[in-house]
Image 1 (spheres, rainbow, N blue to C red):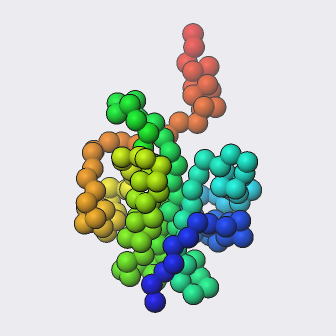
Image 2: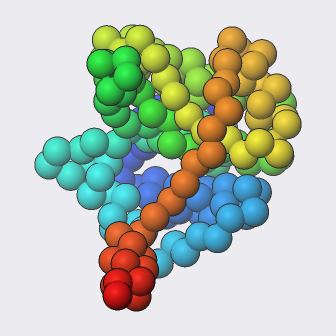
Image 3: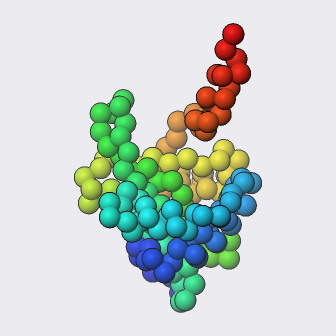
Length: 161
């Protein structure tokens, strides 16, 4: 049985959070689910949602998800669709579910009139990279950096003469 891809519903939030926990574990990253359900629900279902979430459902189980949002590229002088996450549970992989999720992302980009989709994946995730290359994606070597504003302020305060 293949999966049905649909927009996430408010009642899916707790399962999406569980998928985020699994996704972070898979990518060997830290993740705290504390307070995330309320925030995620606000960004998905609030008055002015900025985030789209599609879930892959097989029977009564959500087996995967992807989240995307519109962003702007100064270099291209155009908006693009940024795919923040795409994850399929291990027992549901190799069944075309990732490709179904990507098809939904591509369709949304077309509906929004966007000519490009961008995303990141860890450079060690050879399976994901092979999948993305198989569907026609290309890559640019870059290093993704993170900065918490409070850390920047604290660092600069400590280094001032």
